[in-house]
Length: 286
Image (cartoon, rainbow, N blue to C red; front, side, top):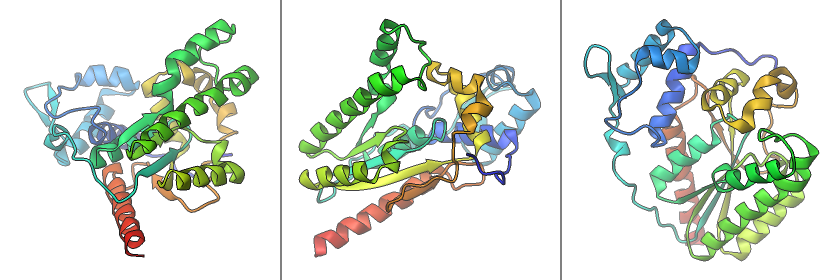
């Protein structure tokens, strides 16, 4: 269950944070024109004033500038250049988990842009097949909760993801994997098997857990409007009762906080890379 003491954040700060994350993740690129204030207000289902407040924050940070009377453009020249691949003595396997809407994919993209490592996102890899499979089984396309999905489809999603991860590591590529991993990261046996497999492949496994407040999750889910989130949003309080925003994996891990009061994902990713570099240096020196 969620923490009862989790504070709600001002909506304009949540929106500014989400746009900032999209810029840092390379989704919004340098020079890209943003929709008008009214269009953004409609997209976010908020007032024009709230959007103006959010844009003012981003303008003060130098991430957005006004081009003419009503247009705004992204000013992020760093997103235009392709990142150079960070080469370490052994391939890195970065496993990123978190609840739906926590920002795990955004953090994975930010990390990929900083390191040049391959990113494998479960939904990107499996979504078309999952939707077709659900249709063939007579289930709703937004089903991610029923026994049909949990027992017949979900295991194969992770099987496909793991196969792609191992193939890349076998080729010497460092991998960033993003998926909820909700069941997996509560299962010590699964974690032990994953660690053993990484050791067999001479790869360094790092577990990352991305967390945020419930209202931040809700904002992310409403904004992306994905079919897989329809049930969650339509039954938000029921869904939220199954979410423990205080959960962390029961093994050594890196915690990434994705709320308006948190450090930007770019800063947290940079600190994470520093820790991996330091660990790689220690291993090389032994």
